[in-house]
Length: 397
Image (cartoon, rainbow, N blue to C red; front, side, top):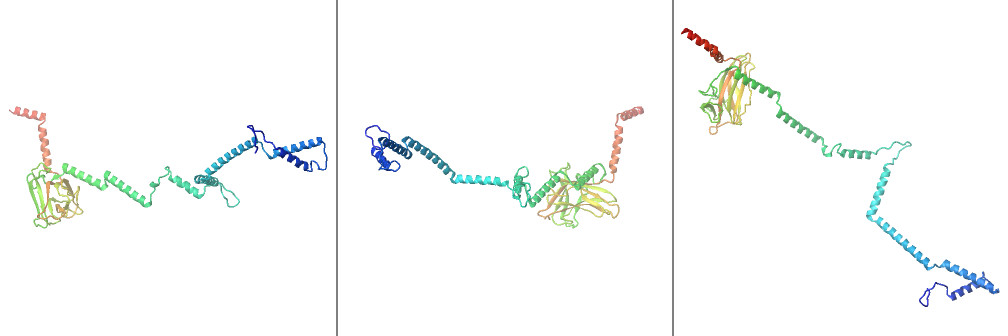
């Protein structure tokens, strides 16, 4: 420290006593002179100057000027600032999140580098290939991609079998609703053929088909004979489909045989004869019509060409009888009903709107005769025939 008198500061310098002390110290040292030696003024001045230079050199090597000190201080400040910045950056890198991120990056880098390292056993190296677990991972990734399949489209064997059954059933249902079996087609063909033949060929055995004048040979069928089956001709209900005024009503009041009994319109069999029995009836739902007959030749056939189920509506029922070539030939044409047994208080009642039998292997002479008569009448009513008749009459007159 330097204490100044006045308002102007001056550069720092040694105090006179300090200078003298330094001179004395130097003068006493062996490298300047020995106290027993005597020097001239010139020598003394030279020695003083030398000592002074050494002192100045010592001061300059030991102390710094104010400018140098400030420069160094500024350098220190800059260093401190840099240090603080480094510390701040370091602190940012030692946070939990920064450490985790750095470690993760390092691990990932290590994984990446390690992925291409292959350890060989033996002295021969081979080409690089995927590790088994990497192959599986690739397979899994490919399996999960949309161009292969979606996991939800993979099924167990049980699920696959079930799906196959569902598809099979759907196909069967679709086929059933669109196509018919060979048996169904054959049945419908036979039915259509029988109806066509009954309308265009053969001999109608019972001509009062809609019961306009009587019962058309429709009688009760009940082998028990207990009076529980009644067949009668009545005024038709309003929903009866024919233009006739009457129909047949069949009433079942209890047990009968076979089953609940029914009606009979006789079919007399003969070798190789074919008969069609056709009737329109309204039988309640839950009841079924059945055929019955005596022997009509060896191997004869007696079956329905239509459904034989009651529906509660007016339905057409067709039955075909094909007689055998040989054997015993009796009669048939019996129809009986099966279902819940009725009682007197809750009878089974059903109706026949029409009923007939057609022998399609015979010809109706009445039709042939009528056709012949019509043909002759048509020949007589032509213009030429009329003119000829008139001319003959005039000539005779």
